[in-house]
Length: 221
Ligand SMILES: [Zn+2]
Image (tube, rainbow, N blue to C red; front, side, top):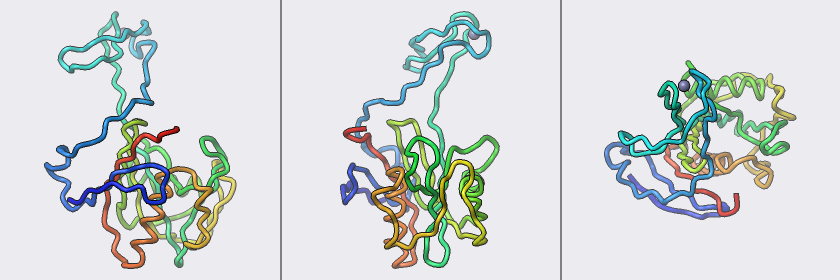
């Protein structure tokens, strides 16, 4: 496993690991400490409606939101997000966001994984919903850890199955861009710019190694 930190021409640091061995060594990696931005709370019990209490759970060594009436504990876990890098005749498909956050910025089609679907199915579904794009998934490309935001993002490489695509309700526009045409200053998220940079660099060799990237909290979020 190769790990290094880079600032490159991105605004923020991130740690990148080539996933040649994602075994036991992965959890020994020294992750930087994160301030917690995303810290959700449950106000009322989902089971009985009583007001929840923040309580230290000795067995878990953590504070959780717990119900003093029925004992229910509400767990919050990271949310998986899926995105698709869709290539067609040397170009990559981007959608212009019609909704916040980052309304008006160009993005890779993607969104939250739904219950009962695989990561790849989620990427294909989001591509259809946001860009009217029928795609075939080729491979998993980048797994992003985003602990400060309580998220994990999975980027897939895909091929466009038909040139018949059009913006869905969450998009203002959908277009195919060559590498030179990519609007780098108008991209929606760090995950998108990092994925595109790697994609175009790897395309020169035709080898797309699966990467694990840890996104750190921005200095000025
Ligand atoms: Zn309860």
